[in-house]
Image (cartoon, rainbow, N blue to C red; front, side, top):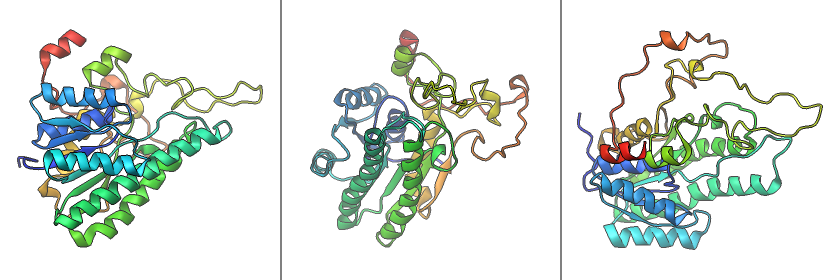
Length: 310
C-alpha cells in the first residue's frame, strides 16, 4: 500500500515547530500542497521553509483561529492559491497552564477559546467549502492523552482537549452526508525531531524536561502543598519505551487523510507506544530490556542541515 496525497490541498492550523510542523511536513512528503497557519507569522514561515527544503510545496497563512474574519480570510487565501481545500488539520492550541487550585480565569478562558473556536470556525468554513464543491475531504482534530485521562497541573488543557474529543464525533455526524470525514488524533508528549527546535531548546520532550509553570510544572509554595506529579524516570513507564515523535504522528495523520481511510469517521487514533492503553498497575521492565519499536521512517531528509543544526 503506497499512500499518496497527490492532487490534494491541506490546511494545518497551529503549524508551530513541534507537532504542527511534523504533520505539515508529512502531508507534503506524501504529495499534498500545504498551507501552514499559526498566529505567529514567523512560525508559519518556518514550517513552510522546512517543507520546501524537503521538496514540497507550501504557503504561510498566518492568522488567529479565534477570529472569524481572519479564519475566512486565510481559508480564502488557500483557495485562491491552490484552488481548494481537501484536508484540514486542527492543531492550534494553547499549551502550558496550572492546576485547578492555581489557574487564572484569564488563562483558562483563553486556552478554551483557542481550542473551541479554532476547531469550530475552521471546521465550519472548510466544511462549507467542501460541501458546496462536492469535496469528500478529511478533517483531523489533534487531541491529547490529557483529554482522555486525568493529569495534574493542566486543568485548562484537560478541559478543552476533552471537548475536542466529542466535537470530533458530533462534527463527523454533521458532515457524514457530504462524504466529509472527521477524526481525532491523540498524541502523548512526543519527543521533538525538528532540527530547528532541537537546536533552540535541546533534545527531549515534555516528559523528559517538564516546563516550569507549564505542563508538569510547579504550583504554589504554601506549606500545605503536596506533590502534584511524579518527577522520576519516565521512559520505562511507556510500554514500548518511547511515545514517538511528530514524524510518527505525521505518518498516521497522512494515512487518515488518504483515500484508504475512506470509511473511517468519528474515530480517534493513538500513536504513543502504548502509553494510554496501560493499566495503572502496569509494572515496567527496565529500559535496557525493552526491544522498542522498529526504526523510524524519516520525513525530514535534509541530512546536511540536520548535522549542521545538531
